[in-house]
Length: 275
Image (tube, rainbow, N blue to C red):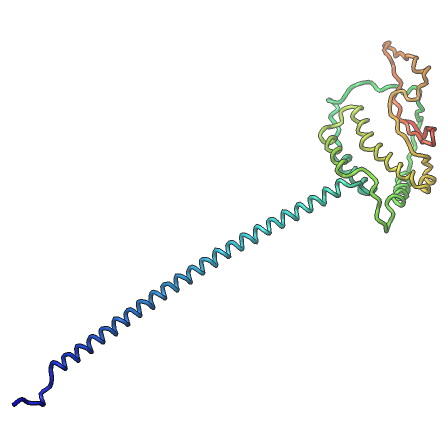
């Protein structure tokens, strides 16, 4: 007769085997879960790194764009300043701007050549001209010139008002100035050309503007304007011009050059002074 109280080893084995398989499955699932979580962490780290790299690239691009915009803004500013300077330089000048422009473009760069390279020749005798027998100091000259200068300014550059732009542009003055600064004065003809272009033409323009103001024209007794003349034997009559003056060597002895200033009134010219 069998003993019903003995354990069922086969059932116990099956139970233990089932529990082992279950535990093994749980471990496998746990390992897979950990692997998935590790992969997710790796992917997340990769995404974070990619995001940081993208942000870094975007920051570089933003910085480059900002630098490019800054350079373009600077170029625009320089172009605007250059355009503004060119506009100022190309527009007519005020009296004060004209005076400074002539000083900077003509007086300051003026150079005289060395005597050894200058033109040679004898000085013509002052025949037919008035010559002083004595010289006296004109002590009040600076004061009188300053008074005239200030008077001219009251008409052409009045205080408290926008000065009218009436004269040669700085651009033109600078262009003429470069011609004179590129060469030294070597002859009387060089000096005559300089005197005409750098001085007389601008004095003529100033007086022409003063003549448009009745009070100024009356105050300075300008008439309708002035005319400069500077050429040889200007004051000779036709009869005198036919006479040849011979020096001791028998060569022609010309009369000295004459520099004259005429005041114009209607159709008449009045000689103001001659040198």
